Image (cartoon, rainbow, N blue to C red; front, side):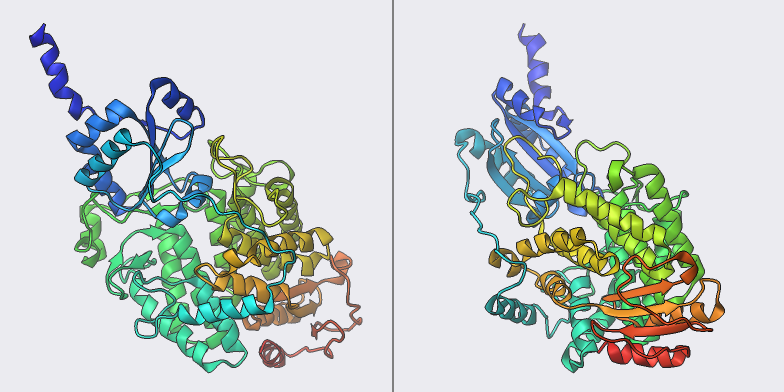
Amino acid sequence: MVLLTAPARSQSPSQPIVWHPWSDEIFAQAAREHKFVLLDLEAVWCHWCHVMDQQTYRDPSVRRLMGKSYIAVKVDQDSRPDISNRYEDYGWPATVIFNANGGEIVKRQGYLPPKQMASILQAVIDDPSPGPSVEPEKAITYAATPFLAPALLDAVKKEYEKQYDVSGKGWAFGHKYLDADSVEYASTLARQGDKLQEQRVRETLQAAEALIDPVWGGEYQYSTGGNWKEPHFEKLLFIQAQGIRTYAQAYGQFHSPEYLTAAQNIHRYVLAFLTSPEGAFYVSQDADLIEGKHSANYFQLNDAKRRALGIPRVDKHLYARESGWMVNALCTLYAVTGDSSTLQEAVRSARWVVAHRSLTNGGFSHGDQDAAGPYLGDSLAMGQAFLSLYEVTGDREWLNRAEASRRFIATNFAASTGAGFVTSKTSTDHTYKPHPERDENAQLARFANRLSHYTGDKGDREAATRAMRYLATREVAIAWLSAPVLLAEAEFTRPPLHITIVGAKKDVGAKALFQTALSAAPAYRRLEWWDPAEGPLPLADVQYPTLPHAAAFLCTATTCSSPISDPHVLETRVRKAGE
């Protein structure tokens, strides 16, 4: 009997951990088996997540404790935006331990070596009361109006000033990365004549070029060590979209060729590595060629030597959200270049998402088989993409689709508090109440507000107002970083620059005027192309004269310019009006 049982005992500590998908039922299982639930929230592109898998979760002591007292759950954060947003402050990997009732006991950020993990697991077994990493949820009284109080707005602007790293360049300390919203807000101030902010934008964009792979193109996620020269090599689709859009906007505003080159270098990487045969976009490329092994030496090689060793894994999931991000970026790049192939890419991707991810009534699923959802981020990103497509084409199909997405969002994601919109229509589990996420609500406020200026639909303004009530809450407004709130506030309280091109869509003169307006206008704009043959504009709040030739008009709330038929004159007038 001893001989029969001894081998089983000796093998038990080395038994691999059985990983389960996240579900509410996992807590019922934990209750039946008198176990805890451990969530490993990872990213498939993440180096330290790979190290956790290879070292920590292969350690005999960790495996023994996990097998005895824990149910292990592993989630790819890209696949579950609801769980990702819930624990976004903890980065990846995030480790969370729950009791069988779904209550949090421990939350840890980043890589945990085997000895530390075993100590945590044993400590929870010995005393399952919540540790210091678990704080009671704070009650928040949301703002009564969508407008930031003057003192709060002043405080947020002062925080924004503190967030610039004067010596290291960029709106971040420690990890260096290109924060698109911070650059965009500074660019807005620069357009209004703020020379210091223009200098900061230029310094940041130049420094951030160190994150662009000189061989394949594409932008690494960030650099460590407080400088721009120690990159982590993962390439996320989100980062590529932000990089293309930011550098393209900078090129349109400052006319520096290096900004266009940067945008194009990121774009060529996306075409080569992250574009599916169908025209949709993949999620990411791994930081490691060999999982868990640093790849700095690999990324120093040229193209041929890299390919001889292999290519880091690409996550080939096709999510609506990611494709929406990239469509929006491609529209920005097309606006400043007029390259029709870029627009064709954007249209092709948008049509693929419509064909394969559409839900009833204008919304979108995340992937082809979602475990939960729907999620706000997918319908929001596609709504933004559709609105951008309308701005760069004048095709009303895209405006109608943007409006349908906004209505789906209002119906399915409005928070019960009356302020903001939640990430998911359903809760992650029975103990958790969904919350609004700050960046999503800032993007939604901007999207719905812009949309309202094209449609005049009161539902658009109501959605922007609801999102702004959340953002105008002090605890939300003063959080890091400040730019998302400042951009949303600036746009919500001011009308966009309004430019209308009047002329047939086939008219060469009208096309030239429209392309000029696209390249010269600021990001916050209402740009329309009215072909009288298509009937009235969706919001016909201005009556334009009938002319024998194409013309452009710049309008305010009370007046419009005289007709402008010369593209060079239009460019000068648009740039001056945008200041």
